[in-house]
Length: 490
Image 1 (cartoon, rainbow, N blue to C red):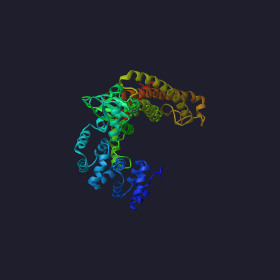
Image 2 (image 1 turned 60 degrees about the vertical axis):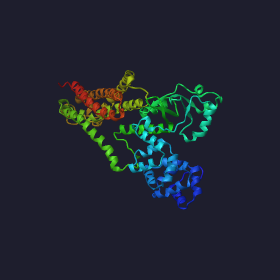
Image 3 (image 1 turned 120 degrees about the vertical axis):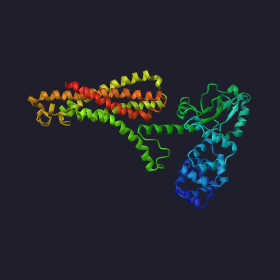
Image 4 (image 1 turned 90 degrees about the vertical axis):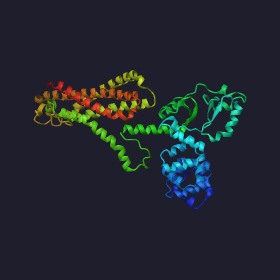
């Protein structure tokens, strides 16, 4: 069975046949996450109790961590106190805290009843940290060593208690007051002379995070300094825990999911997609749809005024380009805002870099808008001459039918000149407006995220809907002004 996955049917068959040896062999050869996925699909959760009876708790504790939350809750209800205590003893505290955060109160009570008093106190302390901070995701199972120990003494201690800790690859050195004074990589310790003091071996240029540091900032620091674990200290600079790379991967996934949901105007899901009921998913979408509808009122008001203006009554063809105008501005701004939000999230720049960023994006916006201006003028001219868009001139004076290359009217000397002027005016009006709209959209797409970030808020949440509304309104107002000037209507 080595290097093979296990299916739900195979696992159920082994459980029903009470094949203890085969089940134990699965845990030796199949990744725990794959076993957990097979267990999640077993309808009768009571069958899983047999696994917890016949497999060592060091394996079942990891299995329990990977199980679906609903399966975990059912198991807690049906496992005996002894079985539950064995599992909880092998679990890392941060994983246990993650499990019980969303559980019903009666199950949390049962869990806390089956852990030692000292560990219960640790769990309660972790639960009291503000959500999405270093304190809420850290583990307290860390290996700290006094700076007065020698290398041999440190290695001896690691051999004695290291297996119970979440990681031993990064060692945290403390003084007798539990102040963090340095870090030490395991390989540096192994190759050191036996009588060397840890104080002489440790790195003093380490980085730490406070228990109240936002988890996204923690992830950025781990990435920036290429760490596999980072120390967490309290307000007195005393070591209280650490965040390991597996915690950071979970944070990165969570933050990325939140950003994608925010950009799509959907409130992030607490559970996985398949575990979220349809009604709850609908409720995640409705608030943003209502907000966007309200914001759309401003665009509707401007459009209403637009249609009553004389220039648009005289040249109804101008109305046909409104969707293109709004879409292009939104697309141009959307490209920039995505770069801004990503750059702010990864700390490539901050609001302090405002002038560098705005200058760079202004130059980029100028080049992009210039290309749009030239291309759109040529393309809109082609559209009118081929009849894709009907241009019947001022007040429809050209027989009510747009001259095209297909009906030959555009080559008629009597109407060619009048038609050409009308085409140029329309193409120029729309193209210049597109230039302005694209440029404005890109600048607004810079200002909004940087402004929101400066207020210590998540740019992804508010930037996109505000961008759409602002760009649409400004583009339509610009359209009115440019069209009025182009057709000399006061």
